[in-house]
Image (cartoon, rainbow, N blue to C red):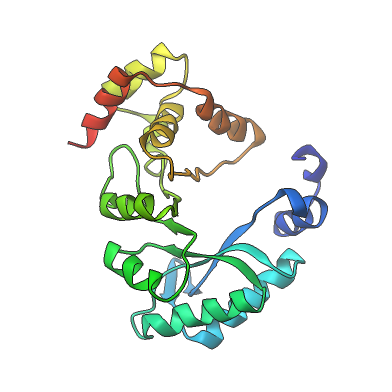
Length: 227
């Protein structure tokens, strides 16, 4: 699949994948933030803005429906219920199938669940950053997928690692980044890491992390790293 689409321009690739393999892919994208300059992003959560962003994504994806549409951030200038209501309306129209939230507190997630079904949450979480532990626990209790962003700590866990990670990696003939991903997969059944990649080879390396089986002793040592 990767090779068959290698000739495409980057901006066309996802839309082409969808057109060719749509039934086999679930595409997740986001709305609710606008870029106003280099490294300048602002929340934009008014219902008409969320609708416009969703419909623009549909055009680019050449699709009638998006598998998972995530609210990138709650806009503090717009009532949460209005933002969630806009997503619920898009879902009712069939333009999105599942609603996700990005960078939320446990309190925000609880309030959201009173308004709409939430299929996924995307918060920072990795071996060294477990600040979203309460959100993860709530997701596990409610059967909500948790998509940890920065699963490799912005690459730090892949480039250089604590001695405990390096030792585990050596024992499995793996890289430290693979161990960090394997730990996430062992840590909770609702965790679904979303590491970035720049090549098919790197993608394959990330996928191979799912084949690593960590022992209870290894997990105990890795669990202690954030302490």
